[in-house]
Length: 111
Length: 379
Image (cartoon, rainbow over all chains, first blue to last red; front, side, top):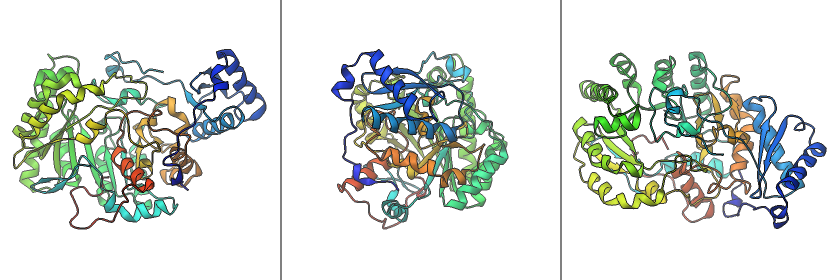
């Protein structure tokens, strides 16, 4: 059921504590939660970056079908929000266009 | 939101929404029901022979491109009809006219009472194909990046010397305009310019081309960019173009209306809403077969919002799944910020503005009264 009561609610931002951690410390915190918190994600997802602005960039170790990867990543994000900081959000590295003709434009999808 | 534009065939709404004509679904949504979308925007392939410099499809690559067979496309139409989808537009992230499923998809949808619209560059939309689909289409919108052949070829293809693509498109558009007249078809024919600020010199020639072709409308819209600003659109520069855009609109005549999507151009790169309610009413499906709430989420970056692929399982099962509704609920939750987590002003923009104002109590949606506008089933 879609809940309409959040129409005016601000999206949480990462806490000061998170922002003051070093890149390595943030990464370690995420990896620790993965190891202990969620068997379905451990070994399936690799952490590429844990950024100061709350973006957690991950890669899928093995390809996952569209029906599975969405659930997996939403589960992961919910876990990280709960265990570390509600201001975290999970993303994958973007993919560039596979259309060879359009690629002649030289547009590179920014991460 | 802007009012409808009166054409010879009825009121045409391009710069707003038509949710009031689907108030039953608004009420069901508000009551917490799992509603079917009113409309689906999709492509039958990710392929395209053009290389438009403004093309959002460059930012919409997901992990895999499934080959969409005709049987998949026809099953999809059956599922749309079963759950109560009222219209489908073949736009999204590929040139659907290239797909073998193109003609049967349109014909089958029309048989089942689903309205179909199509955006195309018309390069491979030849007379035989036009004859097969035009009687079954509610509207066709041709992507025409500029009014002059050299500029058109530069923006949409390899360079200004390749004007053959312009000639080909114009020949096919003229064929459709003529066929509509000969057979008295109800289809609305329009051309669209996706305006990047640096193409301002093309505004007036584009409007003139629309008038010369005798299409029903020539529309100019802003260019979407992703949240990382991959295309580098400077939204601050649109304001400098207001004079030219107003001049273009004044070129309208009885046959051809020149329309500017002012609300999108003025809204720039930041939507007024934080939550993204529109996809429950206007769903998008990629030419890769991927079902995600919006084209803004097709790229692998947004994999957490990937719901399924209709070449791997029936669409009706995807729609009925908890996965589908989890994605919609996520977009309505504080975890999602439409102002920072997606590209600028998606196809669901107008609907999302209206639903946001409805949810906040600023402007409650009301059931429609009076005659239906053209294309009422396309939100």
